Length: 264
Image (cartoon, rainbow, N blue to C red):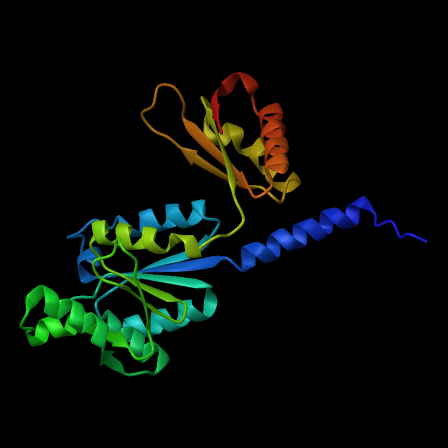
């Protein structure tokens, strides 16, 4: 006799699978640099990484900005590596006194910092005779993986689940695109609704939809000095049908004549 599983069971099973997939696709970003903390340099790297990872189905759970200090780096890297599936560091790799990220990562995992023969060879082709400072650019945590492809002038360092990116935005973008195929979480769908209404007037409807549709993540963002709309509401989910149902429910509950546009 064939057993028929109730539809409700399939819904719960689907929800559990989606939750498990999300749990297995988490990331933390660590931005390293005194220049960020003192406002000398604007951080665009976390913005770029967060957006790219989101589009690849990876949930960025935390972004941390820390100084060029070995102990701080070791503490944060060890913590993030334990908490998240993927860790991305940016900054602190190079030839100068404040480039201490590699030593911090080595300390986080209790390994030595060593000179990579491969990286040293690449540097020798570029500079011929290496100074001690240039040799420092070949340092890696012992046992690290070096990721390269035809588009990279210098390999990307990876140790366990930690990807070590440079702080220079142009280089970070190039190196990320070289490895982005490694990050394939569940596809996410996003809809933006723009309201010509105050956020406080929308709050009741928003709260009702949030309570009714747990599978959809909803955000509300006031916008100042825009003549066309004053609030942008975002709805995102890995299930496009559930997302569309939430969009319809929100438009039904919120003042429909206040919707400026819907962007999918």
